[in-house]
Structure formats: structure tokens, C-alpha cells
Image 1 (tube, rainbow, N blue to C red):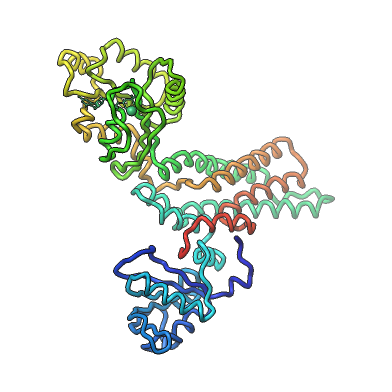
Image 2: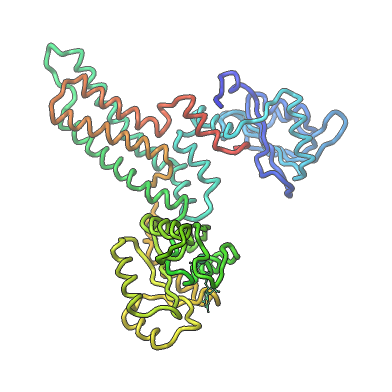
Length: 460
Ligand SMILES: Nc1nc2c(ncn2[C@@H]2O[C@H](COP(=O)(O)OP(=O)(O)OP(=O)(O)O)[C@@H](O)[C@H]2O)c(=O)[nH]1
Ligand SMILES: [Mg+2]
């Protein structure tokens, strides 16, 4: 999908609120003719004579037939989301009314909006840059405090302004060096190489920090991957179900019940955790179970956090110490969870409390001390880093451009080290500028835009 210039002239329409029955529905139009066409079917004030940012009561009629009583909000270009004329019609939220109203406008030559077309117009008309446009999509999908604040920060331009400023400085150097190319005979130096090096090093630091923040950004967007591991029958699936409050995973007293991953998200203290129930760890001759076990081991390595479950009725101190040892070698933060307190012998509990003061005792089956477990989980994932107002990269596309920017900047540095000729230096700087520009949308292609905006839903 890409938009031709002619299509950009169209007036477009879409339902802006979710499909289905609601108290009210908002239908949005954007384009040159938006106010004029609404005025043609609206009975009330003459909308073409009203001020921007005003709301008007009236009826929408198809000929003689009243379709609905509505409120119409006017936004006159350029003071609107798309910077075009925008009208929002609030109707009663029945799908019959919505269909009738939209059909009425289609008859008048208004075109249904494509996915993301409102936001794309906003971008093309200079309302915000590409990174901010993408943040709009993230904001709509943000379902936790952490992902919401990351998206909001990006939409307000936190990320873009930083890049923009450094890019402007680099453009200055690029043009100075290109100017020197015109004076090769004279051996002049308009751009101080020391200043250039200092700027490139500063840029590299920013770019590298943003690249590093991607891991965090990814976690904020998709949840902290938290693996529930332990021996068969330890109660891992029971714990997943208890945390989710639903019977998601099959629980049975047969060891080796779970073979594939079963995962779901839970919001704990404003952070999304993605809990992954796994196959119990043991030596097994069952081929399928063995695959499950080796997958569990792989999954544990890439997790951000592991909940390691012991069955207090089926373990001893030696085994627990051995398992904890293995976990420590893995290098992934983990919580030691002793399950089935309801059927544990008190001697083992006392021994454990003495040797491992940080063990959390729970009963997944009886939903005992799940709160204590949650507190411990939050303690282990360093919450501060999720809540900073710092800029966090959450978008794969940005990450990709940042990585290429870093490579090009490193080329500039090594060019300076090796005193390469100006035309090579200028080329590497231009390449850095290109990748930086990709992030904010100064450099775009139709394919790129199409790809980004097609991920939006219709009406956005
Ligand atoms: N008494 C008691 N039984 C529990 C508790 N938690 C789980 N169980 C029981 O332990 C058995 C095994 O539970 P599962 O959740 O299937 O264990 P699992 O770790 O997922 O086992 P695999 O999938 O085979 O690796 C079931 O019979 C559960 O009802 C608990 O807190 N107390
Ligand atoms: Mg299981």
C-alpha cells in the first residue's frame, strides 16, 4: 500500500472508535471537503461559518430521513491532527447508524480511509516525525504503565529531538568538508578535524546508549520473559494458573505433563511479565519429553528471570543445593520458590530457612503467599530502569537504523585516524546522516512508509 498524490487530495472517513455497540461512536473525516460535505447533510447551524474547535448539535439526514441526532466537532486546517480540515461526528453507538452515516458520505465521494491513513497524513503534513508517528501506534497498544510511558515519551519527541540536534551538527560538518573539496588547491581546512572527532564521539555515545536501551525497550513492550522451571510435578503449571487466575495449563500428578511452552502475560506493579511454563527438568527416555526438556534449558538461558520451583514433598537439601549451584552458573537472575508448603516436613523448612534466607515458600495449589512471590519478583527486576523518563528504543526499525549509524560513524572515526581523503570522509558522514535520517523520517521511501502505516488499524 502506498499513497499517490491524488489520493492525498481525497477526503477520507473512518470509524474512530471500536467496532461494535457502544454508548456513542465517533466517525472522523479528514480532507479539504470534510466540513463542506458534513454541512450538506447536517441540520443545525451552517458548519462552514463556525469557528475551529467548536461543537454543534443537530441531525444527520439522508434526504428527508433522519439518521441520528449527533454532535459535530470542527477542526479547521491546519489546527487538527492531520493538519487538514477534520470533522468528528459523535453518533449513537449502533452499528446500523454507523453504517448509514458512513454510507451517506461514501455516496458523496468521500473515500474510506486506509489503515493508518490519518496518522500518515499527519506525518506527511509535518505534524510530527516518523518516530513519533510510530509512537502513536505503540501508545494505542500500550497496556502497562511502563510501555505507556515509553510510547508517550517517544510521541512527545524525546527520542527524536536528541537525534535531530546531533544530526544538524553533523550536517554542518559534512557541508564544510564538501566545501573544502572545492578548494583542494589551496589546502584550507574549514572543518576542524578535532571538533569533528569530538562530535562523532559524542554521537556514538548517544547512539550506543540508544542501542543498549533496545533490550529494555523490548522488555517494556513485550513483557519481562520469566521462565517457570523445575523438576516434573513441582507444580509449575499450577503456579502459572494461580498467577493468571485461570486454568490455562494442564495440571496432573503425572510427571512430564507439560511438554510445550505455555505462556501468558501478567501485570505486576505496572510492569508486564511474560510467564512461560515449561517441561519439567529430568533425564528421560521419552523422545518428545526429551525435546521439551532441552527446549526448557534453552529458554532458561534467554530468560530475564527464572522462577525455580522445588516440591517440598519431593526433595532434600542436597538436591536443592545442587540445583541452585547450576542456576548460579547460568547467570540469569532467579527466584528460589519452595512449593507445596502445605505438605512439607517442618525439619526441611527450618533447614532451608537457615541455609537460604531468600527462599520464598508458597503453595501454588492453595494460592498461598503468591503476594510474597510477586514482591520478590519486582525486587529482582530492577524497577527503576523501567520507570525512567529516559528515552528507550522500542522499535526494531529504529534499532536497525541505529546499528547502521554506529557502523558508519565508526568508519568516520577510522577515516580520521588514517587521514583518508576528504571525499571518503564526506561519504562516510553522509552515510551516517542517511541512517540517522531514516529514524526520524527525513529519509523515507514509499515502501518504508507503506510498511509502517499498514500496521496501524483503520481509523488511526
Ligand atoms: N499439595 C499440593 N499439591 C500441589 C501444589 N501445587 C501443585 N500441586 C499438585 O502437584 C501435581 C503436579 O502439578 P503440576 O502443576 O502439573 O506440575 P508441573 O511442575 O507443571 O509438572 P510437569 O508439567 O509434569 O513438569 C498436581 O497434582 C498438583 O495438583 C501445592 O501447593 N500443594
Ligand atoms: Mg506442567
